[in-house]
Image (cartoon, rainbow, N blue to C red; front, side, top):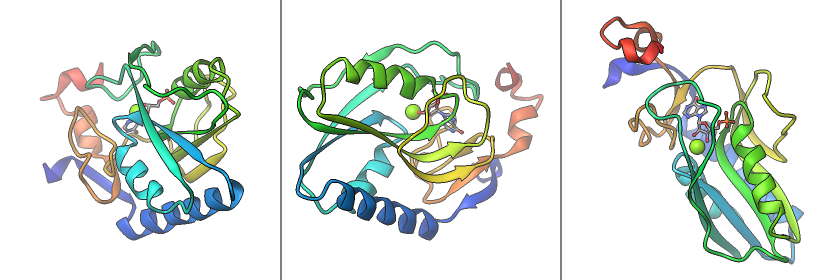
Length: 187
Ligand code: IMP
Ligand code: MG
């Protein structure tokens, strides 16, 4: 399994420090109010658990799940809702959190969906923002780190359902991308 891990981009300490900073910033921005965090499954769950514990406010959580990358490293561009949220967001302060802002299609889709339910406010928070041309004009309100346009794994982010449990964030080994024994990956 180790040979699939490329370069380590963010260490466990760097991630935790930055997530705690985000938590303090969010706590300051919403002082005296209650929050509902809507977490995009599955990649953002570890980010959620650390962020939640860094916010000094009453916070409730809910989840949505969208169609994912499947086993590849490129988005199909098609998004569909697999699991909708349970809670009524009308009149609430909502922060939508995701692991990574890549093309922007996921957040674009979710912002439209959530806005139509009349939250009092809606902001977005992503752990990672990839430096690449986005398919949409979406910008997240809170960003943990800006990273190069490479496929990354760890801290909740998976490749083919694996590596979510890594404590750090690393690039996917280039060998894996182009390996002739994994021809499906290059599709
Ligand atoms: P977007 O819709 O292209 O912005 O993609 C966002 C979603 O794609 C994220 O929620 C992730 O699930 C997935 N994704 C994008 N880039 C990566 C990556 O480098 N590693 C793992 N998942 C990724
Ligand atoms: Mg995701």
